[in-house]
Amino acid sequence: MFCAEPPPDTATGLKADWEGTLKVKGDEVSLKDKLETSVTVLSARNAPLDAFRTGLFTLCQFYMNGALSQSEVRPLFEKLIETYKLTQPVGTAQAAAVEAASKAASAPAGVSAK
Image 1 (cartoon, one colour):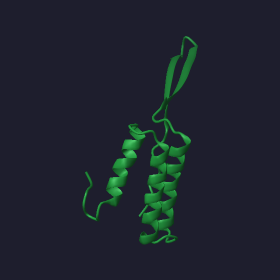
Image 2: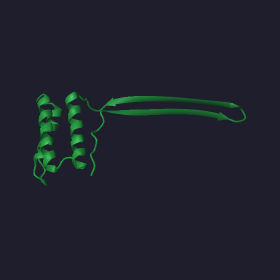
Image 3: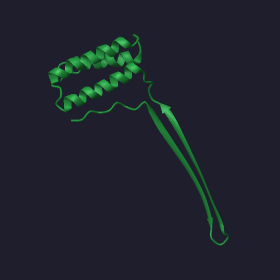
Image 4: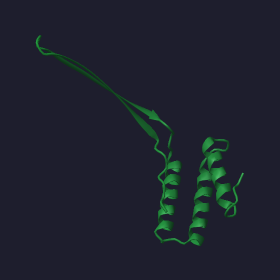
């Protein structure tokens, strides 16, 4: 068992260009280099989302390490979802994603929620 960390909020791109010239008898040596970096925002994180993501990861760790039983972790997970839903404007992508996760979490074992 393991607890997967949430995906990152940004991605970093690196591009390196090298160019070289070497002439032995003509004694010509040159070297050029260029390094470019870029950051792409993958998702915007606000305070409620940060608390939600941290809460999910922490609940998973507590359960996996035996600090919480399955019967103890489920109500805490449901409370975390409900608290997060209360902080999101209706109709946002975040609210829709949490609603889907909430339905999946409340489905009986072995049954997928749709």
